[in-house]
Image (cartoon, rainbow, N blue to C red; front, side):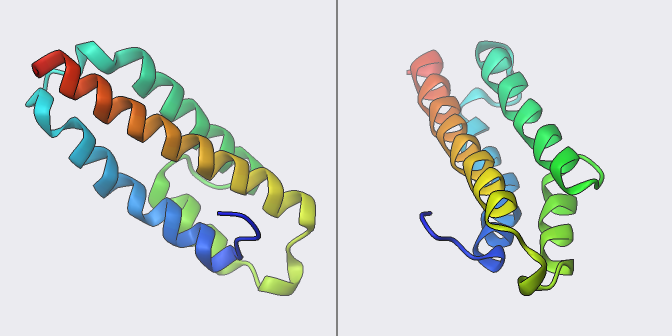
Length: 104
């Protein structure tokens, strides 16, 4: 996700609910085995929302990103948001692996 645009970041945050659902599918609703990872993931989403001063949800973060004109973004803001998106993706992959381990 290097040099990602605001639109790229919005797509990344918008796809997170689906990716998270898919990662959690093996657990069939029992999120106990991944509770700590889920907490870290939600803390990242909360922090991304704070960066943007918007409600803390993946959809709200994505929508808020889309609402800001591209020329109003600073390099620092994009860097910080990109870091959050990358960390969230890493956590989703870790959640999926832990879910597979717990049920496998």
